[in-house]
Image (cartoon, rainbow, N blue to C red; front, side):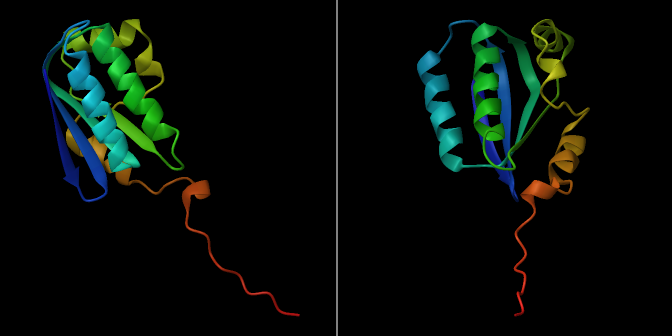
Length: 130
């Protein structure tokens, strides 16, 4: 298992690679989670194109990243690139009903670049006249 962190403008791309077996490399995942959190990214794309399988440890890791990002003001998170085996793991756990999913990387980037909700818009100073 390997996780590559890339930055494309304001988007943090996490490229997952290999097999995310249950109970495997917990220290590596904890270190990566801390690294991702320290970036403070508000827009995160997780790319699973090179993942062969994922177990409960990997699913829990993804949920931790999702929660960390979406608990930030205006935090947005999108996943893409599932093979049938990985898709099944997300579908069984019903994460496919919670986490936004894009058909490909370009679509995921477009989703993250869409205009943010109104509560995320920068405050506009208003003048008060007396």
